[in-house]
Image 1 (spheres, rainbow, N blue to C red):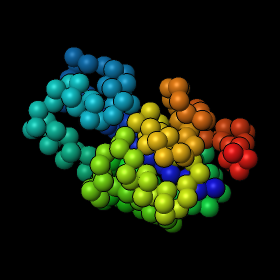
Image 2 (tube, one colour):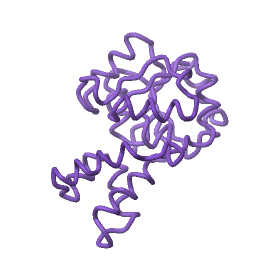
Image 3 (cartoon, rainbow, N blue to C red):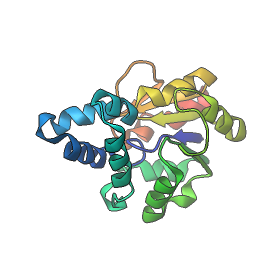
Image 4 (cartoon, one colour):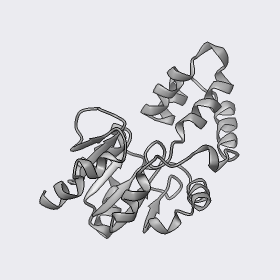
Length: 193
């Protein structure tokens, strides 16, 4: 089983940290719950939605580099899937250095055969170019993400899809927690499909 993973909100619970950063910038006018819901669409969407200035965006990027990896834990149960997969790859808009820092903190670098990061020059999702590159190289069976944006490129090139903590129509599989991965026998469904 060869899996493409999104990073933020899929492998690691990074949204609470981003929510706090936005809240600090936006103040009491917006609730954390509202910020979180905008971030779940995408960080770019949230930046536009709240009309952040270039200076605020620069401040946000500066704060992102200071987030302690201990404040961005992996989701429970995800490691058991990583261990049982034949190949794991990451496709993220996050800068490579930031991803590597978190993976190193948790000792997870060895789980991944490759990563396409936001600073690698590929077009942003939903453009399928990065997915196609990884699929051509690793013959991917499944793409897992937490947003519709993460599964659109996979669907475009014929990879089965799984949404994590998101019930937007269009995915092949849905998980609210990673312990459901084996209970639903997703590996069996992939091998039969």
